[in-house]
Length: 191
Ligand SMILES: [Zn+2]
Image (cartoon, rainbow, N blue to C red; front, side, top):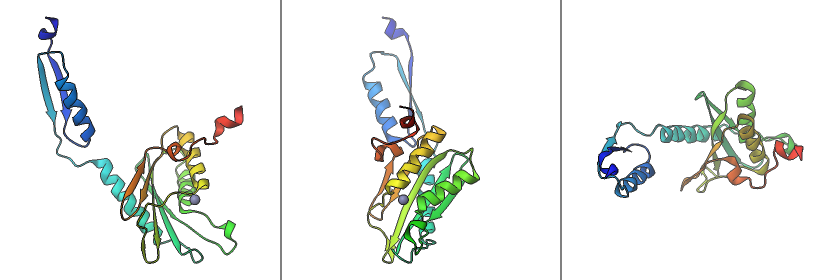
C-alpha cells in the first residue's frame, strides 16, 4: 500500500556510459514500487573522457617520433594527463652506455613531477614505433617504469590510469596496481 503512494524517480543517463543505462534499466524492471517515473537525461555531448584518451594517445604517438633510439630502433612515446589537464610528453633517450638512457614513461613522469609537483597524474598513454610503423599490439611498460608509476599513484593517493596503444587495439588499465601485483611500496618499509 505504502509502495503505491511513493513516487520513485529513476534517472537514466543516456550519454557516456552504457553500463549506467543498463543498470538503470534493470533497476526499473525490478522495482517493487508501482508509481515510477523515468527521467531520461541526454546532454547531447560527446564523452569527454574518450576525447581526452584519444588526444593523449595521439600525443604519445607524436612523442615516439621524437625518441632518440639509435641502438634499439624501438621508439617509445608517453603522454601524461595531469589533474590540471596539462599534458606532458616524453620519449625514450638511449645512450651508448646503455644504463645511462631512460624510458619514455619515466622521462615524462619525472618531468611532470618536477614541473608540477602539486598535480596528480590522471592518465599515462604509451605508444611505440618500430620498423617504420606503430606496433600492432599494445606496448607495455617495463618493470622499473611500473614501479615509478606505483610511487606516483601512492604519492597523490589517486589511481593512475594507463592507456597502451597498439594499431589493433588499445588497452585501458584502470590503475597501476592491476599490472604490478605484490608490489613493493612505502608501506613495505614499515614492517
Ligand atoms: Zn620503462
